[in-house]
Amino acid sequence: MTPNTEELLRAAAYNNAAWCAAVCRDGGFTDRAWSSPRRTPLYYPDAVTLTRDTGTAALIAGIDTGAPGASVKDSFAVLDLAPAGFEVLFGAQWIHRPASAPGAAPALAWSRVCGPAELEAWETAWDGEESTGLFHPGLLDAEEEEEEAQAEEAQAGGTPRIAFLAGRDAGGRILAGAAVNRTGEVVGISNVFSADGTPDDEAWTGALALIASLWPGLAVVGYESGDDLDTALRHGFTAIGPLRVWVHSD
Figure 1: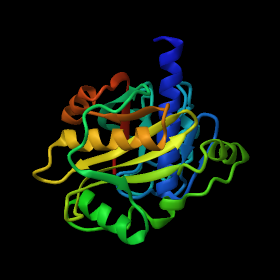
Figure 2: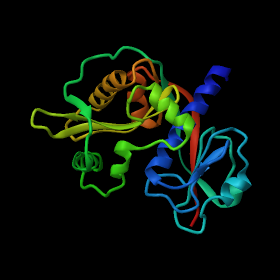
Figure 3: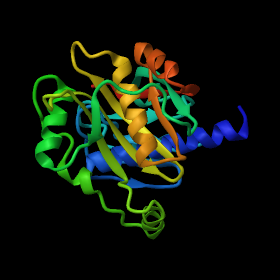
Figure 4: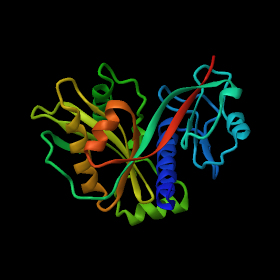
């Protein structure tokens, strides 16, 4: 583990925690973790560790383990939460792609989602069936509250902190997409999807090209597993370290 890799891991973990906090609209940060005292929405953890030395007792005490489905994202795959009644739900790899020029040109027309109606259409395409309101309209114009975050926003020249990216066909239908968020010197990518009949590579090709346009010169981070990890690696990412998600046994 090189110092540079450790720095990247911490940046990726913080970026993901910031995304979870924005979606959940709850919780708070310490220097070691983000956590929510109330159960978070489906697919989202109740806590995300930010360092390797996050204390288990304080972490668990800060979330609601009495409600079904409470979970912890162990960003460095170092915790043993089994004694506290948790079991591993899944493992994945953090990924990193250095700032670089886009690769192949995407086949779809890619742009940012603008407005609640477009966000609803994006979520319907992501879900495959319907929009549940998981991705609330406030994410489209998320405001920074901390002075440091405001300074970063100003330095970015008005570039959005969070954006939903959509690849559309000639008829305007959303056939691929991704959610992205910027923290510091990295852009996080998540929720990458392609509709049935659309190659998975199109989602990564189009999203990365648009990220390079919105945030030129910034590296991209995220996490993936299985076939999705293989696809990300084909698009210039490198696996930099493991993570685990633990879920409380009901």
